[in-house]
Length: 445
Image 1 (tube, rainbow, N blue to C red):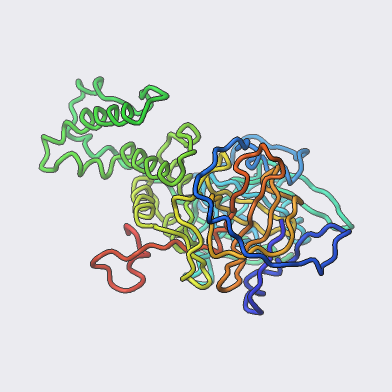
Image 2 (spheres, rainbow, N blue to C red):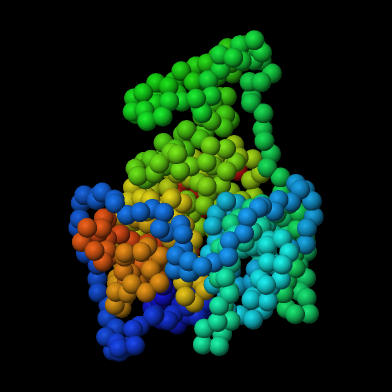
């Protein structure tokens, strides 16, 4: 998919040269047009019959990719030297899928070398508000790979997945231009149950585990089950100076249940069985599809405990009211209750366009204050069966994403929006007692 930005010369550098729109050969550039969207007048949310497994397959990269099995896991706190993926604007989270299309000879050579070894490379976490040199990042492991040649240009197509967080100790550049990072693998701190010290071992058989919850329950039955779960799990709190709700604030299962409730408010189509049951993996999955800017995502990436990460994610979801244009910051683009999932990954996932630029794209039912630019196209569509049209901010002209329109009448939703995370800023109002504009950005830390 092509990415296009208007709004004057100020956007040229931000767009990283990604301004080409794919046009059929029989169409002329003079047909370029700009229209104002009116979809915000619709009131009802449509039902969905789209296959959510299609976006996760990244079929636009080709179906004959070589797949790899196994997993590379480095020891906690160990120091490793890993090649760095250059020219990437993605802040990768463990468990997140990263599709890539690489054309530069240096990148192609690096990937060929990686494939012959442990298939692992480093993705540095650059934040807009931090120092130029990244201090943290995530390892990525290739699980699908293909080389091809088009018009004499060698291209490598890759599917990778985030594995482990790391802290950067040193980065050096080799003679061939490839950067090697010496990193320390950061461990995940598994905190014990806060009531372990006062629980009676003979009564442990009476404890209820969330995995024992009967499936397909109604909301009322589910709430009743969780009430009994909390009553049994935190009954030992009566032996301590603190009430049960204090311990529930640091209980991973209680936090996961609260996050799921929030996620269902954001996205009523989200299925619980599509989410990880492990607290660490669950916290990373939520971090991957929260529509937050790089500064907030970097905060989550630095946290070494799933419990604290879940608490921060709850804080973000509680306080975020809408999403605005990152460039002009005052233009509201969509509300959080318009978010929905059209992919098994959740409401937001990473996709790569033909020019090699990765966009983490959030799907929403409705958006406002956007202009549509250019013609509708089905070329390289990330959502098979939908055509896309470039969308820009009506105020500043920044590229915000795309409008997707169904090419078949029986496909639902008939239309939706895909907003790129790099162009959005979450609106998080300040609470009473916070000082300065930065107070509302440092959540739970």
